[in-house]
Structures are given as C-alpha cells and as structure tokens.
Image 1: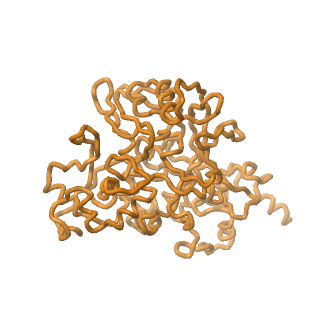
Image 2: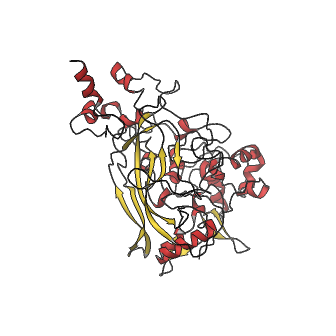
Image 3: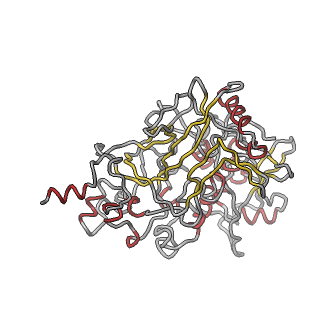
Length: 469
C-alpha cells in the first residue's frame, strides 16, 4: 500500500532520452565515478543550496500574484488542484492492481529529488536528495528501489552498472527542451493531460507546430525564456500558486523579445494594448496529443485492459481556447476557506483577475478545465483525494475520507460533490504570423469571442463602424 505523509510535492514523468554518440562529454575530466548527488556537491555546493530553495525543489514559495494568498507561501504541498488533487497522501510507494502489476509509484516520481520530502531547513541529507541529473544529464532515467532500511528511493536505473552510470552522468549540459518536457508534458497522468500546450512533440518539432521551438525556426530552448538566476525560473502561467521570480514577469512584449509594437500594421499594434500576443498566435492547442478537459472524480472509471481505475476524464484535441481578461494576478480556491462560486455555480479553483476597465489587463487565451471535486459539509472546504490507492481499488469514498483525515485531521468526513473551474494560461505552440487569427475569426458573425462576457455590449468593431457613419 502507498505510504502517506503530511507533506509532499508532485508532477514529473520520466522518459528515456536518446543515447548520445561516443564522444568526450562535458564532465569527463571532473570525476571518475558517479556516486550520487554527493559527486556533484564537490564542485556545485553553491548551486545545490540555490536549488534547495527553488520552486522546483520546495514546490512552495512566495505567492504575490495570488490575490488572496494573505502573504503565505503556497505551492503543491499546501494547495489542492482538480487533477491529481494533492501529493500529501500520495508521496511514494508501489501501488499494484489485482494482477500484481505496478500502477503507480507516487507523486515523488514528479519531483526533482530522490524520494525524501523537502524540508524547510536545509541539511546535507536534503542537499544529497536533489537529483541534479534529472535536469542536466541526457539519457538519464530512474526508477523506484528499496534502500537497505526498507524505505523506497529513486535511483538511476543504471545504479548497478557503474560504467553505464558514469557515462550518463558525464553528459552534463544546460537543460534542453526534452529534459524539461519529460517532466512538464507528462504531468496530470499522461502525455499532455494537464497543460494542453506542452506536448512531447515540442522536443523535436517544426516551426508550423511552434515557431519558437521548431528546429527549422528559432529552435529555442525552454531556458531561453524561462531561465532566471540562481536556479530560479521565470514565469508562472496563470494557475500556479508560487513563483521563483515575482518581480520578473515573463511576457512577449518586452524589449528583449518582440516589443510593444511588433507589427507593420498599426491597427494590429493597437490591438496589443488590449489583446495579448498568444491570443491571436495560438488559435488552438493539443494539436498532437489530446488534453484532459474534464475530470469528474465522483464517477470512477474502470480501465479493463490496465486493470486500473481513474476519474471519468473527457479529452479534447485541437481545442479552441477560452478567453478572459488577465492582469497577471489570480484568485485561488485555498484549503480551509469556504468555497467561492462563479456565476455558473461552479467553484473557481484558479480564476484570472482583470476586466475591461482594468488598464493592466488584456484578453488572454486559456485552457478552461472543468472538474468535480469533494467539498466538506458544514465547512465547505475542498477536499483532496488519495488518488494512488484509488487507482487500484476504485473506492472513491475511502479515497476522499482518507484524504480528509490526512489533510484536515477529520475522521469519517461527510462531503458532497461540486463542479469546479480552472483557468490555465496557454502560452506555447505559438504559430507563425500566417497562421495567426484573422480579423473575422473574432469580429465575424460567428466570431470566437464572447463580447458580453468580456464586458462589451457587443462587437466593438461593429460599434466603431456605426459611429463612423
């Protein structure tokens, strides 16, 4: 059975990387044998200490862009989402189906550590728990093994093959697209399930798929935009709680990228003051792999071939984004706070802030994810789910009540199911200019924008045309 903990982290799918041809690797002269993270620490203690405090390791941090954060640190440890809900009760373990096949190994599979839960206080043990190779070594893979004391830990699959391990551990570089995507594309339970605009296809694609990352285009790496300093990453999307660099917002229209007037046509430059770049330049997403659009935890679904249960999930492909005003801040449904309902009656798990009257807001593109989550009766608190054990037995009532006990300390929790809504910013799979939205895509008779929902009485272009006559 899966061992439960009170703290946790999440989201990392590990894929094999292409084996490199024989050559002298960047770290060949620095060490003879790789003996775990302690080998890296001999030269990179400063970098390890930096990484220890980062979002990628702690999965918790300052959250100034969450308007209701109350100044608290937020992250995967202490918030709830409508995908795998929360890693607290799902940290590490080997969950098997009725045939004895391994279904899942816990949320620590998705963490840049070797199995120990991050602590607030730094120690040598915690520094040696950092898995440097997961982000920096091409060809690296790991799996879950039992330590001598019986606990589980993540180790390189080559841990018994010193020659092979030495070879892989010397293939050190800055993170490449494929290294980032093996984590971020696999989150949420499958390829592209969660984000929708981060597909494995981006590891080696063309400019028609993504003009920035296409190898026949700009061939940009993730770190070209997201690299900050001291192992801090720029950017937080619209539905992430914490951020490494709250004062360095990542955007397309700064002087380092496209600037505030990137078009030759002035009418298009006029649009950029109210419409964000990706709104026009990402007409749809999930072009190769379908993405999870609805996850209903109230209805367990049995997958006979895999002998596994899941929520009932509705997938979408070639999805047209939803559109809303966004000023860079978000309202989040936090634990231990009564749920707040949107106009449609659903609970807004992550809701972008801004309006037509907000000079700092622009119309942005979003993946609109729907869910159904348990809410504690009486207090109206969102409850997470012990999803790992649920995958094996399909007992959703037990999974909810166990999570309420682990997360809130409440025995035999009474709950009800409620619809949820999450806005997730769409910023990748950017199209060349020729594929961007045209005027009539928004301003035509069947345009994709809901003008009234955006605060307009109708299509503003029609109003402008009428006033000119």
